[in-house]
Image (cartoon, rainbow, N blue to C red):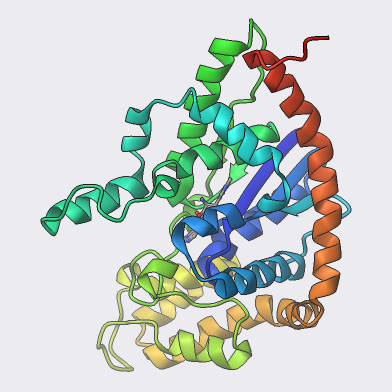
Length: 337
Ligand code: TYM
């Protein structure tokens, strides 16, 4: 069997980047024969970036409803909240004890924070919590706990998965006694959607405030967001350069191959940006409209989602608890009798 695992941090409303970069490829992978999948809400990770409890609670509900609306089949996939699995923070500690600080110093999120501080003439670690610093260790625990082979993610997570491999190798070397305790995970990145651009052409990201939400606000909000995608100022009738337009990159991520070349040809032939956005919206709606209906039905029944997540947590813990017991033994935390 092939173990597939991925998670989404519950700090905001899911957007097209989360969907194309992680949710869609993960669900596809979960449908492959022999795949055994673990998809989860990374709500402990959310605490690192957000101290607004209401926002975290709302985001967990939205992200859960999004996975289910996108077609996650709970009879095949173990679907759970990170914070329902106490074995994960416990494993995080075991891993923390073998993770070199130097490795964490190189993590992108931490480096971005310290670089910004230095540029602003502030103390290097100003505003950096231990949560942010050891973020990749918690993520390694998420992945290693379930012996995941493949981790479908966008490009921004690749470094974290490489760090998880490093930590796993070190742990195996120290405590494996010749056995491979942890599986070495690999990122599965779909090249064409690895970094989906946002409204302004930079990576679509909650932190840049340039996202196109998947379902929140309904069809109206989607339309309004698409209208705000930045284009150049060429008028209808003037030839456009499809290769320099992030609207085209977005279109490609949602249109079947056969429609992509036609769209480019029309732009070269002078299709106006307003019409081009209409085309993109139509392509999106074809995918998202049926899911949106599901989403709205789900989000209106949080108690149903709770039930699903409780079942998922029980399944996940049935895997995590015995493995953690084995790991405790391996490091020397054994009973005396
Ligand atoms: P997060 O919540 O920032 O993003 C969730 C997933 O969406 C992908 N993504 C994108 N892909 C393409 N283009 C974009 N513009 C874009 N924006 C986001 C991300 O790459 C990610 O796959 N640390 C993770 C959550 C996590 C996790 C894990 C993932 C915690 N533990 C274990 C995998 C395995 C994060 O914050 O993703």
